[in-house]
Image 1 (cartoon, helix red, strand yellow):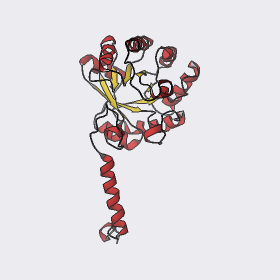
Image 2 (spheres, rainbow, N blue to C red):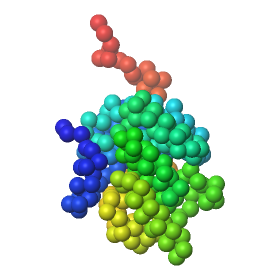
Image 3 (spheres, helix red, strand yellow):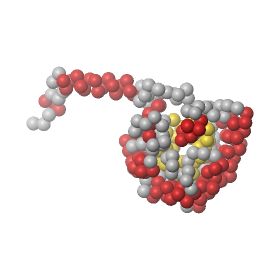
Image 4 (cartoon, rainbow, N blue to C red):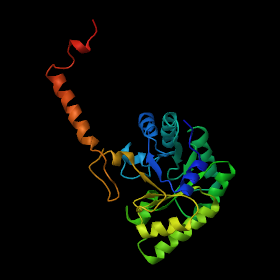
Length: 265
């Protein structure tokens, strides 16, 4: 099966085909998402919360991202793998940003990278592109800035903040990003941004008019009781897993499992 590239993603947008993106953090899940035909796999810094159990994404390190991206890359036969730059890996200097990106690609086997922020990232985007690495942008609710936002809050609700998001998106497009994540912003704002750009927008809590959508896979599958308004829970795996494990525990304790049919002669 042919590996998806940046050109394929741009062609999908031009044809009006919706782009699917989901998060992946390990080989098994990446293999399943890939077999299901998902276009993009994001090794998101959400791993800090849903895998490592932190209250925010901020503690994630470059080494964490590299290790998880390596695993996802092994499972992605056709989906494009996007490595997420963790907090602290791209805020200090452009030179350090490029060094960290190269590590994420060279050691982690990411095919593209994503970083949060607006026009202040444009110089870094250009330098990353100079190194031959495609970049995905991220505007709106950028989780690495939650302390500045005062929590996980919807962005772009005022006329001024909506105008700024539009301006920032155009600056990032001009810098050379190949696509843009729009997170937790009013759908009308997301639609205006999408209509104004010639690159794909990927929405998460940004309404139906983006060129594609992304969700945290663990949210989609119902691993957790919590779910933001924009999350559609397609399964309740937590309930199913609990039931299966409770049944296993009961059978072991009652001497039902294993019986001789699960034993060697």
